[in-house]
Length: 497
Image (cartoon, rainbow, N blue to C red; front, side):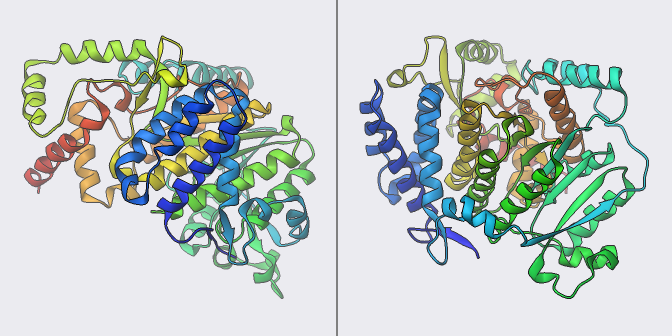
């Protein structure tokens, strides 16, 4: 049964109500920031103002989140999100993954196991050298060293089977940046969650057959009535496979919980990488979060890891030393760079970098909020990606291991299909940004995840493990790079016709 916003079709109305409710609830708990939180809630404004306000609101919210005691604010935000999304009968998303709901759906999904018959492959990423190259070229922050070095150490000391004892639950398994195929290739076990799409499921099943891994494919029991699933060929299985987060959230939570219960010893690494256009991004991310919330409640902490591919295009709290570095780089622009910046200044572009010190959030003197968001993304995308961060903060406070990996924009079909995005990527390359090829990024992210699982998974509040492609190191105010990037790239696209 599909989920929807409880207060109508507008994602704007939903976002304003959810944020206002949660912020006021957090303020009601008392504390030195209560008045400032109420002031923030009062500035949310009406729907007509939201488009101009939402980036500022999320930037201010970042500071409060950073200083929230035991993730109290984040818990309130997650609760409001779960309560204000419901199915067509009026049951909230929170209720859809409640203990009784999951218990009633235990038999709703049938599992088909696809075993690979191929040779085990190795990942292309070369651990520590890859980390040093990315850091040197300002594509990633220094924290990537730890994960990729841990990956190197494990491979050197243990050889094959880096995924032994770990089961990857790939939510959005058929997404272009899903690492499910890479995990299968190195002999891993994958629980695949993705909506029905015969062509994409056929591709994933084919990759599983060619690998040395094992793919667990879900089929709704209602679709399998009278069908001998064991006798199906791969094309027939692809026709039946799939669960939709927005339709089958209860069934998904029940299925994964059952698999984990049957496994008894394996650690389940639940990686969220869902993407949907427009307001559906909020609904899909909220459903993904509801599944993670249910697993956090029902599985032992030592047998669960929650992970996300986070966006670098959001506001984060970082050390002011990063700002001083960017300011110095701006002053050292080449003659050509200064001429280019001077031209684009006429249109409000390529301005000097800046960050916001939000005193009311009581950030330490050496910290500031850096807003890397882009208005073109829209508020639905920012809200959806923030849900992931809220859950990561709440899970960490509860002692659950998390992997919150900032990943750069990639050259995927879903982005390159838009001419304006292709133009912006080209232009950003001239400014110092690199969009990764999808296959390369998947391989790198798989290595990072394995390194984190084998090493010490630690909370990274300042995003020092971020792989951002250079967007965090451009010597300009991030809000002023998009128009020039699109302009520069558009000219190049025309020239290359």
